[in-house]
Image (tube, rainbow, N blue to C red):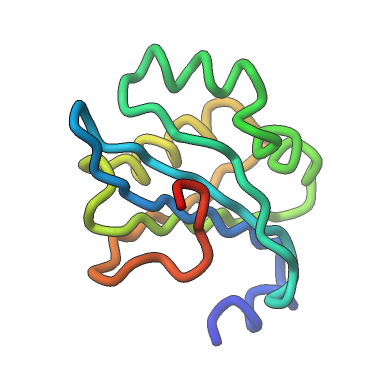
Length: 124
């Protein structure tokens, strides 16, 4: 597995965004884990779709995600952001950009998957 190989070279933080359709908009449920493949997943709440709301969410700590990202310090770190296809359009890219501008992390990789993300259950 790619994550296992990466753990030998750098820290890895995985973020998953689950798209939950609602009557008004899509709810982008968020969870994350750091370092190990068997690490527990933690919720980071809901990633807002709008840029201003997303900035406020990050200012408020992003449900613990911001502290986790900033705790990496100078250690090389990659953030993998997976979003399922029902999540808001390009929300993983937008979150990756916010992470790069607000933390010491400079490498984020975003992907949209056709199947539901495996670990994010924030909206259920």
